[in-house]
Image (cartoon, rainbow, N blue to C red):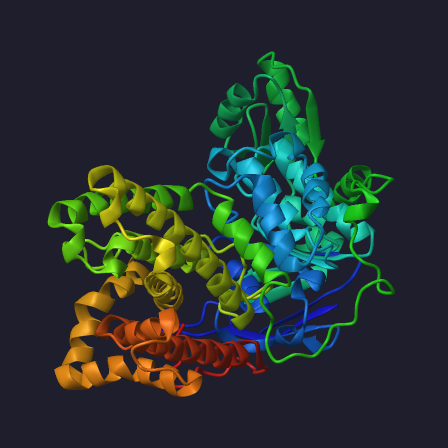
Length: 596
């Protein structure tokens, strides 16, 4: 099903590549074990296989390059480590958000939670979960789209024996139903008991490709398995006799360099009770795996991989798309945690304080736009606009800090579909925040000043439109800047750069007379179109005059620059992705200028 051809990582500073010319195959109905000690290149090989890490080589799924599959998650599910979800999001909320990204019904989230045994703690936050619960959630994410293949990077590492046994049972159940599994690990015994075929790595190169039983007979050292309530005391006695003892758990030890008869005699002489004493061999390995495989599949039918006749034929596309339902995904991502609400409440509080400052300065001496938007002279921008910019920056800042959209085998976080969804949801949030801030400002001013001095918002549509446009523009600037720089802080910095850098730049370029002419151009254009005098035209003409002001021109200039930067970074990422996943080579040296 999956073919890896010539996978080679890019070397750094004349050092050998971590993985060199790695070629293998993962077949349906089998568990393929990728064995090697720490630093052997297992994780790098899996990341190269999925296209997560740049390198050379090709990954084919049923003869098609991985990067050309329209729905990679229908073919491959991966567990590459801890689940990179927002720590304050619940397990159910995280999976439902991914259901929207993958185009799945929300009920699928509850199905996989039950499958992995997390249904009882589905509403607990991710930062409260143990390591075993996090690994189970990782399996839930990998199985969400019912993939035909699983790519697992040592999922049983550091787990207690019971959880490790659950992992291996789930892996065997997936393969028994026709799925393909690539399981990386460093425990040779456990991997040989679970896998049908073992690939051994040493220094990033393939040194063995054998059936599990043959691998155990030819490459695994025999040892004596011992289980006793006094295992540690027996281990000390055997070590004094020159045997090598490895503790598997509190009551289990593995003894190398001796026989079961010698271990039994030592235990008898010292009165130590034994619950298990057995020599391991290839025959025992075969019996253990046969006993461990359940006669019935250990997973419900709704979670099984698609059979060959049931799966959809992958469409050939140039790039993996973004979320299937981007608007729904973005709404669940943005409002599935409490992060936006402190921003909203903080913006409204600052807007109320700005209203107090405006009342002290005098409403009659302040423009209608500043009064309705709560834009005190002491602030570079209205509080609602700054809050909208922060909400926009969070949309992509959290996307890269907590990458729920897994690169290489899932929707791309830089896709145009996702960007459009973030801009739409951000604009709607900015408009709602602006409306709430306007209501707060007007209420504060009416409490502190005479009612007749406070302008009626509905009588000034141009000012309302200018305030709304400013908030939406700041929000979009935050979204685009965070997408380009991949951080929330720089996204907010781009919003604050509008009054601090962009406006002075516009004034320096155009000068005073040209700005006045540009500001009057909107009113003149409206008078020509509608056949009214330039002094009339209502709110639209005034809104067009607002658009000619330095602040709006600077904001538009910043948005144009950020759109160009986003397009350039997306095109650069696309070229690097194609180069790293669609170039079959035989372990040649990297091209000059390539980055790791």
